[in-house]
Image: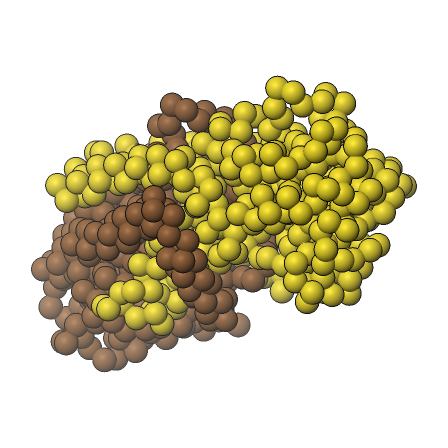
Amino acid sequence: MRDVHFQRVTLIGIGLIGSSIARDMRAKGLAGEIVVSTRSAETLRRAEELHLGDRYTTDPRDAARGADLVIVSVPVGASGAVAEAIAPSLKAGAILTDVGSTKKSVIEQMAPHVPEGVHFIAGHPIAGTESSGPDAGFEGLFKDRWCILTPQNDTDPDALDKLTRFWQALGSMVDQMDPAHHDKVLAIVSHLPHIIAYNIVGTADDLETVTEGEVIKYSASGFRDFTRLAASDPTMWRDVCLHNKDAILEMLARFSEDLAYLQRAIRWGEGDKLFDLFSRTRAIRRSIIEAGQDVDAPDFGRHKIERKD
Amino acid sequence: MRDVHFQRVTLIGIGLIGSSIARDMRAKGLAGEIVVSTRSAETLRRAEELHLGDRYTTDPRDAARGADLVIVSVPVGASGAVAEAIAPSLKAGAILTDVGSTKKSVIEQMAPHVPEGVHFIAGHPIAGTESSGPDAGFEGLFKDRWCILTPQNDTDPDALDKLTRFWQALGSMVDQMDPAHHDKVLAIVSHLPHIIAYNIVGTADDLETVTEGEVIKYSASGFRDFTRLAASDPTMWRDVCLHNKDAILEMLARFSEDLAYLQRAIRWGEGDKLFDLFSRTRAIRRSIIEAGQDVDAPDFGRHKIERKD
C-alpha cells in the first residue's frame, strides 16, 4: 500500500533518527526514492547493508540534488556546515527540514544558507532511545510520539502542510511552536534530565567510599534508571548543551535552587516539607501514563520482559 | 514442593515488600504458617482478600507471639515503635529482621528493645517498583536481586545462616555489609536518585514559562524516566531522608559540586569537558546490563511492551 508523499527524499545523517525515518518510509512507501548521505564511509556502508536507501553517497551536496524533501539528522552543532554544503544543489520548491533537539540555534545556523524558493521548516520529533547509529533505528519509533515543527512567519503554508502530513504518515502527532519556546520546553523535559543523569552517574563514578562494583551491583534500587539517559550519544548531547545554553542554564538554576531547599529540609529534619514534595510529584506520573507517553507496567515493565525471555 | 524454612513467619507491614515476601513464601511453601499484621484495618482486609496469610491481626504484639521469624516491613521511621510493641511477645530463639532502606537508624531504633535470646539481624532487599500497598507485590520480585544483611559482631552464626538461606530461597543473592557502609552505598545508588527525581519533577511543576501540559506531552524525551522514581511512596521516602541524613547530605554535596562544574562548562562553552563526562558514563550502563541488573532492550523495553499490547 504505497502512499508516496515525495518523489525523492534525501537523508543527511543516518543514525537512530535518520535510519528510523528511512525504515518507516520504506515500509509505508512514502518516498519514490531514498538517498542516504553521511560523512563516515563506514556508517554509509552499514546503511547500505541494512538497505536503508536506494542511493548512497558521502557527498551531501550530491545527495541533496533534485530532492523534494531533505531531512538533516546530524548533531545540532553540524547543522550550519550541512546547510552551507547542500545549499547550491537544493532545487526550487524543495522542503528542507531537520530533527535537531534545539531549534533557535539550528535556524540561526541554517537559514542564512537556504536559497530563495526552498522551504526551510525546522522540526524536532520527540522520540528516541539511548542507542545511536544506523542499527539502532526501527520502524514505529515515531508512532504516537509528538513532532514539533517551528515554522516562521514567512513559511509557505503548503510546504508546512506537506511536511505535517509526512510526519503524520510516520505515526506522529504534529505540533507547531515558536523556536524559543521549543528550546525552553525541551530544556526542562529533555536537556535537564539528561544533564542531571550524566552528572549523577559521574558523581557515583568518582566516589572513594563506595566502589564502582557496589554501584553496579545495587543499581536496581534507583540508580540504573539514570544510566539509560547517561548512555546517550556524547556528541549529540555536547552540542545540545552548547546550542541551548541560555534555556539550560535557566533550568539548571531553578533546579539547584529547589535542591538547596530540599537539602535544607533534610538537614533540619523538616519531614512535612519533604512529604509535601514527595506527594505532589505522583500526580504528574499519573498524567503522563494517561497521556500515553509511558507504560504503566511496574518498574517500566522490566519484570514482564525478564519473565518472558 | 514445600521447603519449610520456618514454622511460623510473622509479617509486620504488608505493602509492596511484605506482600511480595508473602506471595513467594506461599508459592514455595517456605512457612508452616503466615501471620499478617498491619496498622490499617483496611489494608489488613485487603491482604486477607488477597489470601496473603493464614492469620490476620492489627495488633503486632499478638502477631509476633510464637513466631520463628518476624519480618518488619514498615517505613523506617516506624521501626522503633514496632520493636517496642512486639518485644514482650517475641519467643527465645526467634529471628527478627526488617527490610528498611536505612540500616544504622533501624538498628539504633530496634536493638534496644530486642529481648535476650532473640536474634535481631537487620536486612535490606534491593528490589522494588514505584508502586506501593499489598496489591503492588508479586511473586519473583526478589529473584536475581541482592539482599544485604547487616549482622553485628555478636550475631549468632546459625541464625544468620538461616536468614541467608531464607532470602536465597526467595531467589535473592545475599551480601553482608557494615550498617554504616550500607547507608553510604544506598545513599548514592538509591536515595540520591530518588531525591533528584522528586526534585526535578517538582521544578518542572513550578515553572511559569512551560505549562504542565507541555511537560506531560513531551515527557518521552527524558523527563518521564524520572517520574517513575518520583511516584514512589512519600512516607517511605520522607523517612529515608530523615533517617539517613548524614550520608544523603554528603552525597548531595558531591552531586551539587559536580553539577556546578558542569554548569560552568556549559556557560563557558567548554565542549571538551562536556564530551569527556558524557563519554565515560556509557561504560557504567554497559556494566549494569552485563551484571544482569537491567535489561538491554532499547528504551527499557517500552517499545517491546507497547507493540505487544
